[in-house]
Each structure stands twice: as C-alpha cells, then as structure tokens.
Image 1 (cartoon, rainbow, N blue to C red):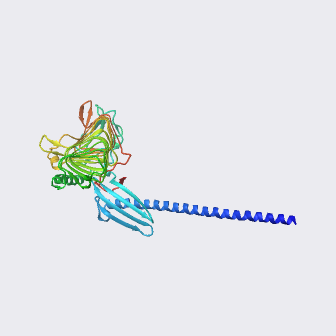
Image 2 (image 1 turned 60 degrees about the horizontal axis):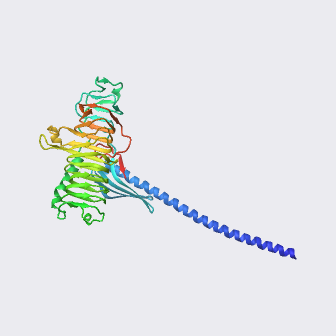
Length: 446
C-alpha cells in the first residue's frame, strides 16, 4: 500500500516537472519568436534603407544624364522638383539649382517607408583636354627644365621639345610624352563666368535702391539677430561677421564683407565691393567682389569670384569644391585689375582661373602675370590662365594651363623655364566647374 502511494507521488512530481518544462519552453519559444520577428523587421528596415540609398544615387545618375544633354537639357539644367517613380520599387525626387560655377543638388530616394538623401555641391570631372599635366597655349620654341624639375605626365606645346638645363640637353624618350599641337587660350568657353560676374555686379549696383538697405556699417555677432530675417540683407557700408553661424543667407554690402574669428558660414551668398577673410570657416558659399579679395586665414571650401585681384595666404586651408576666378581688365595702358596671387609656403586644393576680357586681350592691353605661385607652395587641382603664370619652386598635382610660363630662381625670371618644380597627375577628386566639352561625369561634394 505504501509502495503504491510512493509511485503516485512520483508520478505527480514528474507531471509537475513536465508542466513546468512546457511552460518554460513556451515562454522561451515566445521570446525567441519575438526576437526573431524584431531581427527580421530590423533587417527589413536596413534593406529598405539601403535600397532607398540606391534610389538616391540613381537620382544623381539621372542628373548626370540631363547635364550631358539628355532629354534636351544642358549643363545648367535646373529643377525645383523632378520626380520619377520606379514601378513596384520606389521613387526619386530631385532638386537641382545652379550655384556659382557648380550646382546645388538634393536627391531623395524613397523605398516603402524609408527615405535616403544625397545632397551637396555638384561639379564635374575635368574635360579630356586637361588630361596632360601642362598645356602652353602661346607660341613657344620649347620648354626648359632644370635638373630638380620632375614632370610626371604629358606636356602639350605648340612647337618644340622639352629640354634640360642651360645646355638644353635633349631628354631621352621625351618624344613619348611631349605633344606638339596648337591649343586654345582656355580649355573651355568662359561664358559661365562672364554671366555670373555680370549678374553679381548688377546685384551690387542695385543695393543702394533697396528700401530696406541698412545705412552705414554693421557687425553681426548673434545667430538670432533680426536683421538676418531680411533676405537679402543689404548694407550700404561694411558687414562684419564674428562669433556667428549662418546658413543659406544672402548678404550684399556696398563696401566690405569681413569674415572674422568664430564666424561659420554654410551655403551662403556674399556680394560686396571687397572681401577680407581674416579667420573663421566657410563651406559651400559663394563670394563675389568687384574689387580685391584677401583670404588671410581660416578654412574656406567655397567659391571666390572677383573682377579684381584675389590674394590667398599660407594660413588658408581649402577643400575639393574651392574655386577662385579672377577676370582681368585694363582701364588704360598702365592701370590693370585682376590676378590670383598665392603666398609662399602655402598648401591649397581647388580650381583657379584667371582670364581676360576677350576684346582687351586681342588689343594686347592685358600684360603681366595672371597667376603667381609663391615659393615652396603646394597646389592640388587646376591652374588655368589665358596669360602668363609665374611659378618658382613648387609642387603641383593636377593640370597647369597657361599662355606662357615664367620660372623664378633666386629672384631671376626666365620665360618658359621651370626651376625645381614637381608636376604630377591629379589622383584625388577636385570639383571642376559645369562647363567645357562633354561627356560629363558628375562629382558630388557632400
């Protein structure tokens, strides 16, 4: 009788354990199912976001198609809202507006409930005519380089060889990388720059007619300053920026614009008689000055357009969408305006263009060097000039296009000589303006 009772007790205990195990197993299965579901949803969302990124990238590719002439468009194509639906997959929404030498683009890709965005400044690759490292468009009888000069690519001359040293010794194998052919004064039509300068000059001339223009000079030091609600903000004197962060603003000053310490400007437009960048930082901004521009210090990944001289100091750091454009003019036989001057011992990246009024250039009124490089400087990008380029000891990565070259050694200048210069092909992205021959391969600076 006792044995039967023990057996019943054991059966009850086993049954209890089985019930407990079933409850625990059910709880674990429920937890695992929920976790698996969450992981599956997270993976699905990640996939959708990645697919949205592909769609946004497709929007940039679609923009490239239009800039290449697709559907009857050109390199100045613009739109407030271009949409395209990919059946059973997603959609693309593109906004593209010219901004100086480049364009501002925003491409949104949407897949299900996920949206990805690619945005920034849109430029292009350099035209094929800039694939050599040097092009001299003017009349030459060759180029002379000293023993310390290194040329790492093809050289285009209208006539003559590249020789070495005072004795003008032939360089073995140079016939493989020296090309004799005529070249235009510029590798593209400067119409884009002419239009930009004309439009900005018109804006500057009309600032006095703005009924909301501020008389006198101002100093902006607070992001919340109510003056910034006026767009554009017109100032009849100087506009001084210090300890302030601006984004997407337009300021037109009758006299100077001064960028000073702790000023941070992004996506802004500035038009003035002259410019002083003493410090601060600018990113994807557009500057135009009718007079001189002085970049003394700071971080400036922006466009600087001037109808006069631009001077860049050694304390200035730049980025891949930096551009300097100076249009040279002559008022009489002695007074000339315009040049790009790089100081000694600096290091910069960008696109530099100095060109002349075509009529005055044909009348031989424009003289002197259009671009002057400082001693021991380094430049990455494109140096283009329809006049003379002065180049002392320097390192260049990219392309140099000029009507003539003047080498400098110990204060002595020599036409079509290079002293201690290293020029190599460009091996990193630098935005080129949206002009020149096709095909266009777009580059986005985000």
